[in-house]
Image (cartoon, rainbow, N blue to C red; front, side, top):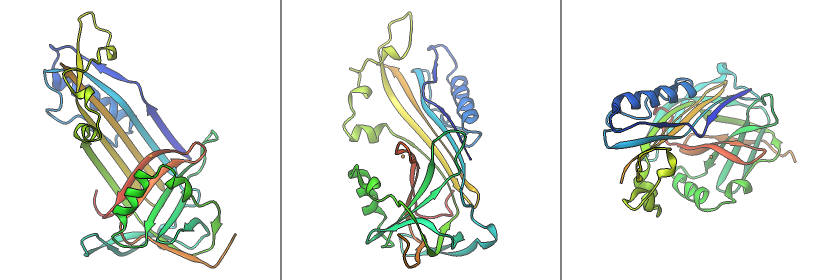
Length: 279
């Protein structure tokens, strides 16, 4: 069973004379509500000031899914997770010996963990992409981002017998300001004084709007029962994701994960686990 709450077109606008802190509070309250309390402060103190004219909520997404085959919590054991710097930490690992949707591709193993279906025909799954090399995360991430068909070519299509799979429990919270990243990718005009985003708002007073900041926050928790995840983004403007011999997947070093709707191929979340103890 999964629960998805997605709102892609909510807009908060305010005039120059409104209290910026009050508006930020209204936006944060909306985000907290639609993400079931997982994201409480999308707009931190000071991110909206009196030069702002419009705050546009680009999206807020909440996902909660239960595994089709849940992990037995009594089988969860602490184990060693190897970090990129050569050290290691003790982390709780979920474990299973049931047949799994898994495939090996030379230096890469991919595990698909399906979620129970809800009331519609959508089928969501989490994918664990584990490079063979303990330091293979970055080259894997580069392939995933630069080769459009990479994921489709590495989707496990059938269950196979496994000797064991071990996946760490993890909880990740992450936030960043995306405007500099987008500028680096070549998106310059919306941030410049030459931009005109006035159609975002119906105002009796002519406004020439440009983007001052793009804020994003996400949260993902994976445990024996399933996954709970949320993400939200905001744009602030201002004037001017055949059976064979048993195989193993031991995710004891950095890996990529993503949550995907398998019917359409749409990826809702994508991330990396470099230390499962980091919240």
